[in-house]
Image (cartoon, one colour):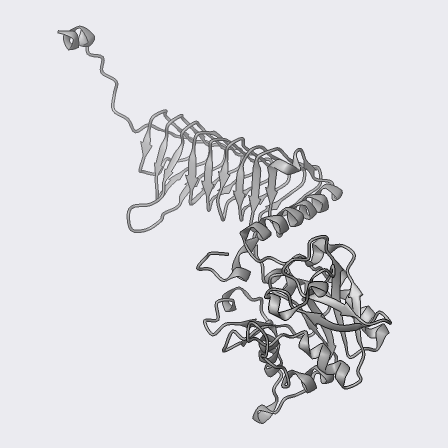
Length: 431
């Protein structure tokens, strides 16, 4: 990735890559999920509650990673406890495998009665992937790594069926062979697929389950690969919303994160980006805007060229218009912030209208302060509210005012110097 950030922490549609297979495993019914990390424990902060972390002290390959994960099952005194059910192995950089694909693999494993079942797929360009070698009966004979030419033959590199890095093992069988993995290969690592050789040598059967849609098992090795996977994931997100009754005018010009919720008959117009855990109700309109971790209730309208930052809430029928930024503010039902305004750390009451260039001065250099705008308030253009300040219900402010004292309900607040015209000014400047 050419990055200081661990590969699996790079975001895919708003969610760290590692959490995609974690969520898929949980959705497929996994009773216990163990994520393997380096000694720096960089992944720990993003893991959901109940997901365990195991540390792989040395970067010694996929086999070493699974050894670390199995050690998390150690019982009292450190004695290895063998899992009673199947053990599913997923890769943090193969993010698109979903619960349906996992369920299909688990079913195939149960039906085969094999000691191990590997997920494979067919690729037109299998470069970089381990190749699946089958025997004359079609059973899996071994997996050959191809990243270094010394690990494979030319004939093996021409095989187009590849190892996806996804396996299911009988727990007891896996525990028996993990300790016998060898690092005698070009990379000097413990390859997990070697367990298949060891199982076959003991007379156990190894099955393969082909995943027909190769997109689900695409690995991410670099930023170009991440971009390819992101496009697939984004298309699936768009399709889910479209089929649920959301209008996305031009999906190719729209970005929607995985955890975004959108109600029926809402229309998302081109060049909009909706990030994080944003929730949008029914019959809303988003036009050419950027939304992050915010809430739009039914009938709300945003944009064009609006920026809704985290903590922003637009109540039913509220409007945020052109070139408006809202941060950590509650815009009441039917209230309007039509254009050219910044509303930060504010509560705006029902049916209020904030005139063009209304600004909340919410930061005094040391702390943030809130502004409170009552119901049916009308601010004149170019009003600055110096927080903390409160504007009462049905109050007004005069255009160009800097309001730093509360305005009572029904009052007009004006805070500006009187106009003075200087006659002959232009003539005097020209002399």
